[in-house]
Image: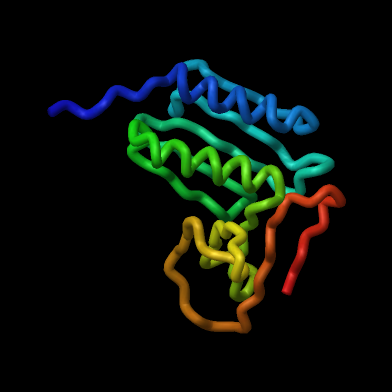
Amino acid sequence: MAPKEVDRRRVTAQFESIQVAFPHLTTTLDTGPGNVDVSLEIPKQPGLDFDVVVNLQGDELHLNVGSNFWLEWFPCTNEGVEAGFFESVHGLLSGRFRIVEHHRRGKAFKAVLERPTDRGWESNGTWMRPHLPVGQPTTIVLQNRRDGERTQK
């Protein structure tokens, strides 16, 4: 059985729905030729304290936040995978979701996308890189807030 074909028009419509849902944010939608099939860039601006880029690459949906977080959802031909991706993007832009970055010696080694639950926060995806556990860890929380507040613990 052959894999399902990615419906590029459907993904483009989903990216456009992000633009409609967050009209106060300046965005750039790119559907032209290039390394990615479809890309939506949302730069840091009033009301958003970090850059966000979402894109479609083959059968993968990518979410890049700030300079550290990067996660992909695949195959995007799976309706549950696609729904989870767009829920995460909307959650992050609305301020319901957050990203917790873990740093040592000024460099991020882990970033966790978190969603709220009745008991606090749960992981919705993790980015990590190899690191040596040297130095005191610090945590930075990226969460969209109206005042653009950035929290450091």
